[in-house]
Image 1 (cartoon, rainbow, N blue to C red):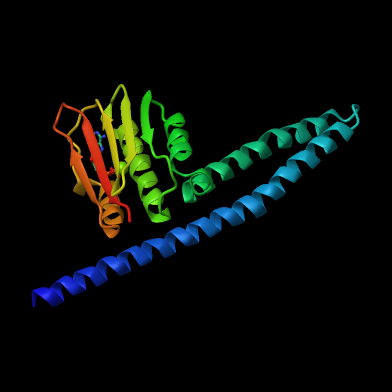
Image 2 (image 1 turned 90 degrees about the vertical axis):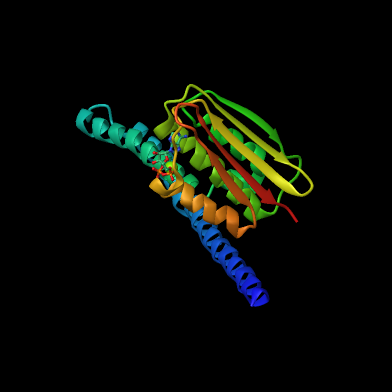
Length: 215
Ligand SMILES: Nc1ncnc2c1ncn2[C@@H]1O[C@H](COP(=O)(O)OP(=O)(O)O)[C@@H](O)[C@H]1O
Ligand SMILES: [Mg+2]
């Protein structure tokens, strides 16, 4: 009885991580298609439009103004597309691994972020992706809910596990079941055999910690 329970538990967590890996792979493919296809086309359109703008005769002020508006709005659409594909799958993570990806997340956060990253090698892809999502969601939560004045992130790779911690000095009182972000993170981390811990006493800030086994 205990044996078969343990066996089905193991099967369940293998299929969980298989599902996650398949979804991640699909997202990576969409990101590549957007980057190599749509974005490249838009980039060349922007260049062509600039050339066309210079070719409009000066005695056609109305046409000049219309083309000028186009050359302003098209790059904005391109920026939006870049932002969108970053949300689908962060290319910087597959290319450079966790340290540059975490620095990019920190840069985009509207609060002062202290980063302490000691990850001297590439980690298994599912671990990198999970770690990225943990930090990304924790930073989004801090920005949305915490009223914090600063955030501290640490990521340390040891032989047996990657340890992550995101701490803010905000209002605390976070409860995992209330939204979907933390519950989704728990699924992702547990599918890899890891643990996610939330410590958020009311009035005393929030710490989210994850341990992701390596090996
Ligand atoms: N850093 C934080 N500081 C204060 N409250 C938080 C923090 N993170 C989460 N919370 C609270 O816990 C709830 C659950 O968080 P989460 O699962 O990420 O859901 P949501 O989709 O609302 O962000 C949030 O709705 C919020 O009320
Ligand atoms: Mg959230």
